[in-house]
Amino acid sequence: MDKLIINGRKKLHGEVEISGAKNATLPIMAATLLAKGKSILRNVPHLNDIKMMAHLLRVIGARVNFHDNVMEIDTMHAGYFEAPYELVNKMRASIYVMGPLLARFGQAKVSFPGGCAIGTRPVDLHLKAMESLNSKIEIKHGYIHANCSKLEGGKFSFDKVSVGATANMLMASALAIGETNIYNAAVEPEIGSLIDFLNLMGARIEGKDTSHLRITGVPELEPADMEMMPDRIEAGTFLIAGAITKSEITVSNCIPEHIQALIDKLEDAGCLFEIQGDCIKLFPPTTIKPVNIVTQPYPDFPTDLQAQFLTLMTLADGQCLVEDTIFPDRFMHVAELNRLNANISMRGNIATINGVEYLSSTELMATDLRASAALVLAGLAAQGKTTISRIYHIDRGYEKIEQKLSGLGADIKRISG
Ligand code: EPZ
Image (cartoon, rainbow, N blue to C red; front, side, top):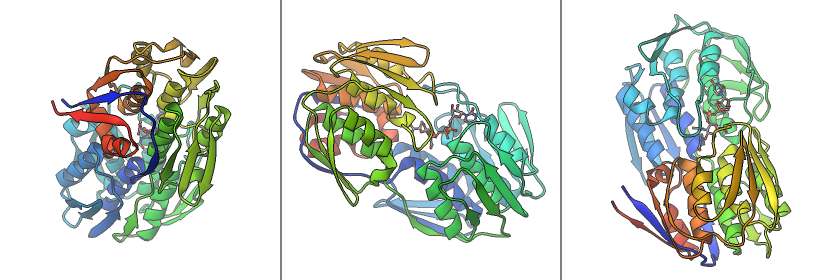
């Protein structure tokens, strides 16, 4: 297994370009199953999760070519309806094929996802949403079996905002008979991007960026060609890298409004910004001020930046609280950060962070994707050499992270295991 070795406390400088968004690309890859023929996705990041979804599409019978960040998916011969345990077990986003398979073929068999490092993560909302479109759901031998003769439009109000269940319902209802209304839908930019792709395929979806989506089902969809949007979580992680190393850096090829909640909190922490078009220049604080955060659905502070922001706060001048309301157990990074001399205590889903003067390097173990990013940030700021093992987690969601950080002047290298 590869490791990352970081010699900390190097100032960063220059510009880093953001890659395409993993969490926008995954549902769009699944959506290509709704049509027969070749869709083309551009600006696709080379990440393990993306390769895993490509593998799943191949299992379903699609042909997938992926070169130079361009992915061609030909679904002409897709016809196998199962997402097997071996894949769902490794990547929960495999559940995104349920809606498209059900809509195009009238059946889907998807391994029931278990818990993961960030919590129990139920899928009840996905299932209720599919049922509301006139499909029958049964759980047998660890698999979700979804069947319908033809999906029919319906009304569904989510009890809780769910990005994944909104995406699944959008994909399924695009081919349903009649009109579907989704209330309390997720408004994350990745959902907006899926709506753009579905509408390019010929779907009729109104209400983008609002919590009420109206879908008028169409009899068939065409393949489409679209550029994937920039990854807001990668952009946010690099801004925090600038702040924690007290460095002036520019993050380019991003959509600043997608990370406004982070920018606001970094301003409270003492950072200044110059924003022009798709570039954000960060001017770091001399002293990091303590700032409380509470994660909430978009446009509030994202759970996917909680671990990274909490890491910044370990070096703040005072005490603050970090609460995760989306994934209350997503705090595996806390124990590792405390091994670096951080002072964090947990009570339920709230971390109390008492800022320390310095982090002191040691050997660390990555536990999940964003926790790994947090450990890398800690390593950049810590005195001495930090070694991070199990970094396959980071390769799921950060394209060329060590090359990008080296490009900014960090002393970071990967050791192949
Ligand atoms: C997506 O996960 C992202 N994954 C996650 O990013 C992200 O953390 C999350 O949205 C929240 O923004 C992808 O896009 C592939 P949810 P998802 O359904 O769709 C509860 C990363 O690091 N819930 O919006 O699975 C759930 O437990 C990953 O890139 C139910 O109760 O998240 C949570 O409390 C990790 N029942 C809340 O809703 C359900 O059926 C929001 O989860 C579904 C969800």
